[in-house]
Length: 99
Image 1 (cartoon, helix red, strand yellow):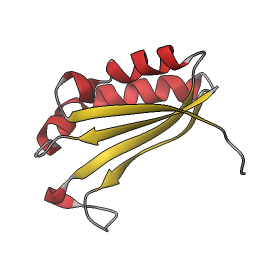
Image 2 (tube, helix red, strand yellow):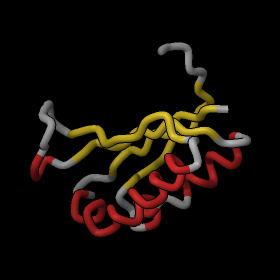
Image 3 (cartoon, one colour):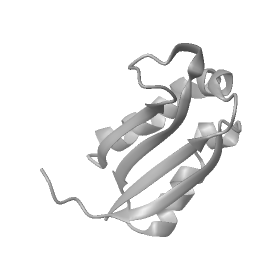
Image 4 (cartoon, one colour):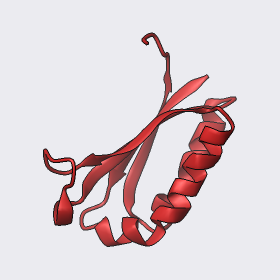
């Protein structure tokens, strides 16, 4: 089943994000390579494609897992969680309708 994973950034987390971004992207690439990633990306803190020092308010990942528990475990193991860039992560089942 698909799961929506929404990470909510902690205040001032941009340097933390930047420090582990390659590891974060590697985990997403592994999901993509396995055919389990629908979409992933950050949410800019301001209305701009490059938020600069304003950073991000969080990220959204929609990926396929065998269970909610597996999706939650994957989310908790994200490098952004491990360094405190995310204040919290919400994981919910997701039903893809379109396209």
